[in-house]
Image (cartoon, rainbow, N blue to C red; front, side, top):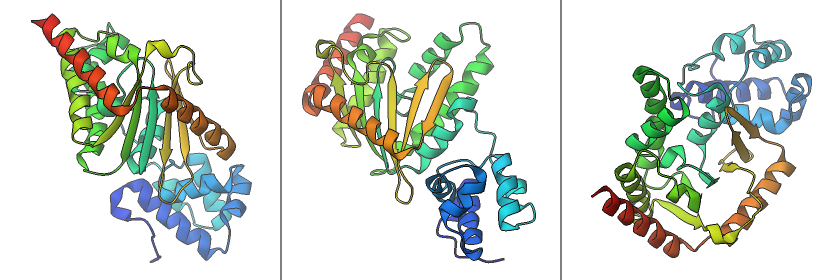
Length: 278
């Protein structure tokens, strides 16, 4: 049955499923809130499914089929593209990241995945899993490098990253790898592809002291926040909670060094690592 797919169905299986959901919902003359009620989710969550920023779960698909009378269509198709290579707790965040127009993040300990070089990513993965096989490590590195291809687009998404100074000082893989990794970030900043700031140790306590924070904005869906811990992750869509995290990020930005001073610190630290390697 043809329908007015507002998303590009060719962009991803989720986009195709979301476009079909929007068409079938409107055909049934239901609002997003009305469809969300029997699923015990908000109307904004339905909007995120339609926008392709959230993955439809099988139990949700079954209920959508029941409410919309779609004869199992969504249950049959919601598993498309489930092999991602990402840890289970990060799948939804990675999928949202791929459709975001803006990504703003605070990184307290490690260079974020989108900015990692191959050797840095491999060293991080080896540090997390010291007894893993080489094949297992490569299975972690490959999707991380694939994610970084987002930055091959010259303008989207806007990426604004605040790195804690600890990220610069923590030697992952040795001085040569650190020099390369920081040089990569500096190069992206020099080309005006990203905005990067450094939160210096001298800043002391701050609102994001408890951990990493990622905020994602979209053209046609509400913003999301992603919080990550040791082997865990949480994607947050409650508007009030996301607004509080946005304020937290604003405080971090206000406390961090200005972009030019941050870039100078990143480049000088990379140079120091280069000298150490020699």
